[in-house]
Structures are given as C-alpha cells and as structure tokens.
Length: 376
Ligand code: ZN
Image (cartoon, rainbow, N blue to C red; front, top):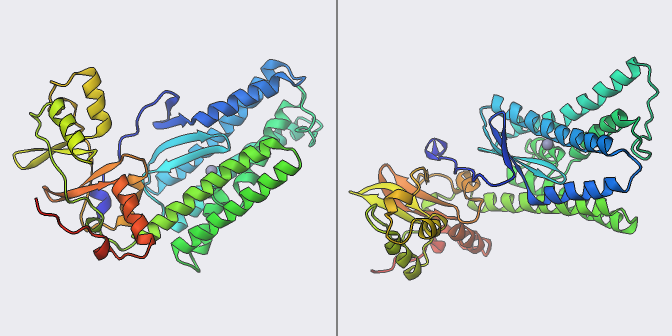
C-alpha cells in the first residue's frame, strides 16, 4: 500500500497557530481581516462592547466545535486531521487522506449537525425558561437577546454549510451521493460547478442589494469551489498513472559532509530546488531550498549539510498511483523521494508535477510526457 510508506509532511508552525486537543488550528490571514472588520463593525452598533465580544467569540467557538465534529468522526474512520485552518467563511479541515464516499458523507454531516444541536439546545433552554424568543433577533441586536442571536447564528451556520455545493459540507455530501451513479471525479466536478454557480449568484445578489458581506463570502466560496475543481481535475489526469511516469530522474545529490556553500553552488548551477543527501549508497536526508537558505543565514556557508538536512522527508513508491500521492504535493515547494526499497529512483516535486499535469491536459500520454533520457 502506498499510504504505508507515505509520510505526511510536517505542518510548519507559524504565528497564529495553536494546538487544541492535539490538532493544530491555524488562523488564515484573511480570518484576521474578518476579526478586524467585526470589531470595527461592532463599534458602530448600540451594543455594549462586552456583549459584542461574547457574541463574536461564541460564534467562533461554534465554528471550532463544528470543525472538531468533522475531526472526531474522521478519527473514528482512522483518518487523522493534519490541521484546521480558520477562514472567514468557516474552518477547513485538512485530512491525512481522503475518506471513502460513504465515510465522507458522515464526516461532512457531523459539522452542521453540531450547530443544529447548539442552536436547538439554546432555544430549548429559552423556551423551558419561559422566555419570549425573538426570531428577528439578528436584525435588532440588543444585549438582552444575545442567546437568541448565538442560537440563530448556529442555525444559519448549519444551513449555509448544508448548501449542496463545494466547498460547503453539503457539497461533500452531494458528491458522496452522486458517486453512487457517477465516477468520483465526475461527482466532484458537478459539486464544484454547483459551488461556482452559487458563488456567482451570491456575489451578484450581494452587489445589487449592496450587501457587501455577501460579496465577501461569495469570493471565498468561489475560491474554495475552484480549488476543489482543480484538485478533481488533477486526480482525473493522474488516476492510473504511476509515480515513476512523472518523477524527475535527472538530479544531483549531496553528501552529509558537504558544506552549505557546496549546496548553494549546486542550487545555482542546476534548476533543482531539493537535494537528496546520500551517504554510503543510503539516503539519509533531504535538503530543500528554504532550509538551505535559512542555514546560509543562521549557520553560515561553512556549516555542514548533515546538521541542517531534513531527516523526516516524504517518500513514495514508484508504482504508486499518482492520484493517491497528490494530497502530499499540494503545497508549493513540496518534494517527495521516489524510493524502491532503499534505492532512490527519482524526485517528485510540485513544480514538475504541475508541468506534468499541464502536458496531460494537452492530451499527451505518460510515455510521451516522460522526458527523453539525456546523456551526461
Ligand atoms: Zn464543515
């Protein structure tokens, strides 16, 4: 199984990342923009500052609980959540691998279900406390109807996420249902097209009705749908193609005793960005461009490769399905070593992979795409 040899790339720890129940939660920079927007928006309202802060944080907590519901159900299927990224339209969980359609349906449903439960729970409490529930609370925010607004916010969150379009949870559920009648890639494309149509109509409506928050949301829905569509296209172009057809076979290696200066010279002399480090015929590490430059700045050009190379690099098998290893290569600058046992056959890099995909789109078959072996 390719998964067994495939090690997930380490998640870089950046400012704005914290761990919750063992899962890294990252705040996307656009999310910080949203917080600023909400704070400025809140200043203009007649609410007391404390109520407004409680309201904003209660909704953020609701989004986090929603994401942890996804993580909880996927963990029950044995799928680890690598990280949760908080975007303005909600969180996005990055999974270690893709779930089977049947599992994905339940993983997706768990999130909105939790928000329905929170909303219903609060309303149940309000009714049982014999309080009059004002359903127009969101239009007339007051300090007194804080609970109603949190409950309504959760129900809106659930409804929005259940829209049958990518990148919403409803889009994932739609895809899971469609895979009963169509191939997985077709199902993904349908859900992605639905997402783009939804985003465009939402954006247009927002512009015409001057609801600019809606335009903002539409923009992110469009990005998410386009991303899922591109990922589906990538999968269908690589499905059934072995890793060895797309790997880089012309590459140089370093030794652990080489200096950072040697590595920098090689970086200049070649178009290579990642250098496998070999010692006595064995691969002992990988030195990427970022680590090389960082070492140059902090340790100086005379430090050794052995001290800065990455010992936990990703490896893939040459006959693994390229579509299976795509999730490893989503970040720019990703590199995985193609290993047959202990033997290094080639490099799989995100740059080379995107060129491979481009050529495949123009109808070239893997054998034609394969670069002719050059002498030397
Ligand atoms: Zn969700």
